[in-house]
Length: 74
Image (cartoon, rainbow, N blue to C red; front, side, top):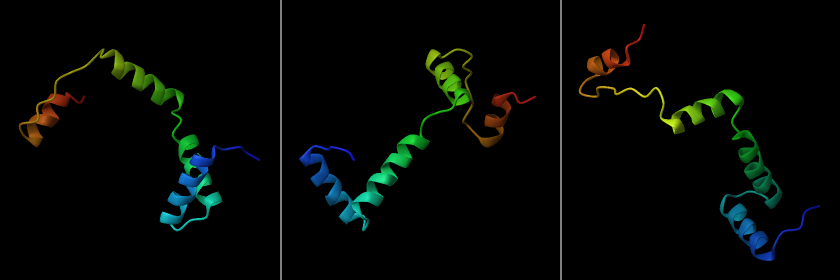
């Protein structure tokens, strides 16, 4: 059993109805999305690396060929 603010419950009921779902199914779907969007360790490390802006390179977007060359794939 969960306690929810009345305003939140009303809004969830409206959204569930708009999506032709039961309240239970709608809330369960939202919770599954949240749980499945928790990044794993590899993804978290990549996110931190991107935030730190270390090891960034510039890619050439003038053409597909120049893009591939700028990736420096070896």
